[in-house]
Length: 394
Image (cartoon, rainbow, N blue to C red; front, side, top):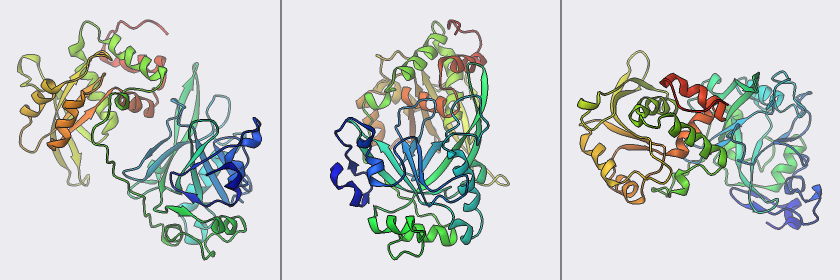
């Protein structure tokens, strides 16, 4: 969408909106699209301090490894981190008061329909190269189906240079709304968000009964490329290199690390034991994944294989076939590697429908970052649970 047309444009999911060409802050496309300012990840019309925000915008660059905002298109869940991102401030004492807006919006979301009317529609935008282009990613409602209040909004601890501080991790649902009409935006700014004849049905249903209608978009890409399995940033590559160095000369011990990495990705994992090398039967670990209510859980058994490979050494058909051949009836497989899966091996697993979770180097880095291990110092501390390592001091 050209910059000159933004002031009157509708918002269409995954459409790109151009920035200006003057070389100044006036080129910001968000400020042209909506009256929410031209700076920061939190933008809004109104005042968070006074509880009068009528329209909220969450803007993410996708390029901050310490704060990995993520959108899962297959579930419609979006994870966003608050704006207290450095030590020295209380959780809600931020310049833009973004965390105040999160706190109040999630509180109101759990109250009556009248209280939910105070929750501003949140619009999600993402940086899109080149230049100042942005992409509209959807209409957000606080929380999500099946999430507890603690899962929806959680104050998490982080540290920088030994100083600790708290920030919010918030989870939203991208509602099943493909187009936001300009007239509804005008009505929202006038205080008539739910009374407007242009209100999206999914937003009205959420306000009236906290009913979520997520935008579900199952992936059509069944085989990830090498680039998609590898961290895209130098910091992520350095984290993988740190893990490889920790197990240099005793790569078999990576099996214990792989089990804990899988627990980060799949928290419902129950007991899991690394097998003895002489009796592993082609499986590095055997474990249980627990589903169902806590009063009557069901444990599904899985077999795990781990390979601490260099970034140039892919996991091939032979290694994957070895795990497949060892899977028993009603078992699924987990394969964890610090490298990537060869295209042929990946393709055979997916095309033949084998129940195997393929965890590549990028997945490892993303799991560690989501758990708060976003830099080399914190990763080194995490690795110490696996015994002495050969990593250098920070």
